[in-house]
Length: 222
Ligand SMILES: Cc1cc2nc3c(=O)[nH]c(=O)nc-3n(C[C@H](O)[C@H](O)[C@H](O)COP(=O)(O)OP(=O)(O)OC[C@H]3O[C@@H](n4cnc5c(N)ncnc54)[C@H](O)[C@@H]3O)c2cc1C
Image 1 (spheres, rainbow, N blue to C red):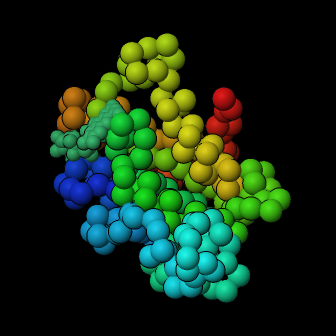
Image 2 (image 1 turned 180 degrees about the horizontal axis):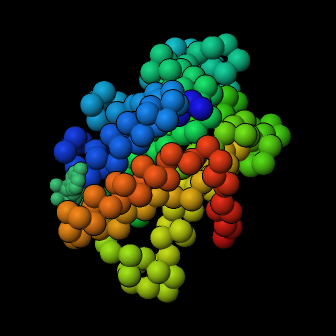
């Protein structure tokens, strides 16, 4: 199995860093190929505009999706976008490792998605959802929160964590055809004991050992 892990945390010694390393070590030890992309370490530029392209369909007026379709036809993606597209196209499983920021993705990861999920190449025509471009591939969000599990219940203080993740799981991943696996959520790693954090890392490793046979979830509708 070929796995592609996209990682968004600025501090290697963070708990996200520990989850990222655990995933790499576990999957490699199980004989899988692992390709990683450490967005902060690589200083990935998250701004999406003409820098996404080496070509211009309309140099007078920038419309991103028109340029994406043109770049798809003529091979006009900038090297840093093309490289990420190829990693997604080559993998069987994609994992995003990130802390929840403002009920969503950290800007650097959102910008990565804004630049890389290009119209024509990753969706469009009849290719959406169950007929999407990435049909047959699996994706998994591995996310940490600041708030404890108790505040992330339906009707609770912050609401249902699965509803919070739905714009990502449905609006980006399922939309482009990925089968979505259950998210790996570590609630409030900063508030729990070191033993509990170690247990989370062990649980994550155990899950990854058997990930090849895991079935996708329903991401839900609105
Ligand atoms: C801009 C912004 C927006 C935010 N928005 C939200 C939001 O909407 N909702 C929300 O709930 N939270 C939010 N947060 C909080 C954020 O989600 C959490 O701070 C983050 O998820 C915690 O993960 P971390 O990896 O940064 O933890 P860290 O603080 O890095 O780690 C937690 C603890 O784990 C320890 N640790 C590291 N490695 C190991 C290891 N191998 N074994 C055991 N322990 C280890 C660390 O030393 C530390 O004590 C936001 C934060 C920011 C900055």
